[in-house]
Length: 129
Image 1 (cartoon, rainbow, N blue to C red):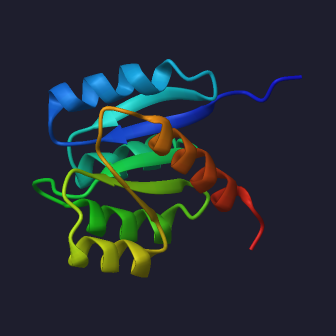
Image 2 (tube, rainbow, N blue to C red):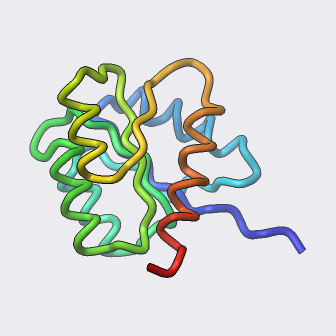
């Protein structure tokens, strides 16, 4: 029997990118995009209302950036897998994602790496600690 698809929340302040990424991820049978948020505040509200299995989180956003949202979600919803997803990943971004214990994936045209990271994050979050 096939596993049900992982429920994914896409978080990015660029609405066009959010829509494109949602469509691309939905094409993978292992994933089902169940929502999208425009910033960390909205992401936290959506996770609280209906926790997904995993979140693809942009890092640079208004109101609440991805670093802050990841830290908050780690504390409030440890069962939700988290992946940092960004176009720019300098030393600070790499250090912070490492500190937060989340995988960092660079935005590119190919979604294979992000899909694999989302699957790994969901597995880690579901594993008993």
